[in-house]
Amino acid sequence: MNKLINFIGLQRCGTHAVANWIIHQSENAEKEQHPTHFHDDVWYYDWGSFTCGIMFNSRFPHNPEIGYNHLKKIKEYLGNPTVDVCLLCYECSLVYMHYDCKAEPDLYETDRKNFQSNNEQTVILLRDVKNCFASFYKKYGHVPQHIIGHWEARANEILGKTKNVPNHVFLNYNKWFIDKKYRQQLCNDLSLYFTDIGKSQVPNFGGGSSFSGRQADGNASSMDVLTRFRNFDKNAGFQRTLQTHKHLVELSDEIFGEM
Image 1 (cartoon, rainbow, N blue to C red):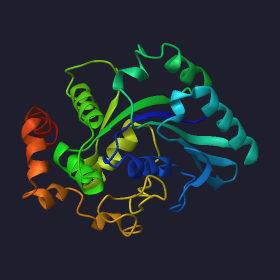
Image 2: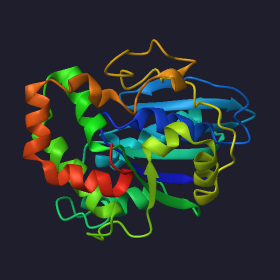
Image 3: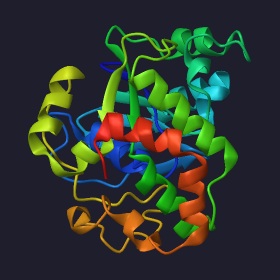
């Protein structure tokens, strides 16, 4: 395995779009490709010439033995290719579980044993709180309490207020979406081969945008993802949520700048 990335994302923060882009940052990725669904939350990209990218989304890393069995099955199915990038996507879990594992002591060490690579890094992805919460309001009409906690935990880790995930790379979704030079720098930081392929896609997993689904596939840069919260300027529930959690807005402003 050439590259293993532990990817700590969050729902409605662009996790699937960025994961799809990361796997396309390979010298073997010559064009945009939507992944093939293998089983449950496992997807793979077949670049040909016996190379591929594999993503285990959301829940699979929390049952690493099952995940590893699927990795073996995918490789056998594709003719035992070299895996360019294997991305373990932790979208809905606590930050500390990936290193401290107080809740499931054997979880992370089993992941490391089964998915070992000489080139392994951890990424924490986050989007500003107003646009993240706006996407939840659009899709569900509220922000689940566990998401509020997860967003705060990731923000604190990014700002160095907690140190549960050492040596991580922070991926600023807002900058990733608009700044090509930032995306190039991310590839340098993650030892990836910059192609920028996949940036215009709305992937065929994860449900797409809360506002437009997958309508912008092929032209994702046209989506107004940095001002979604303006749609809720007069929404009493949304404004009350921001007021109740104004400390999160302050954390967000510290990371992303005032929106």
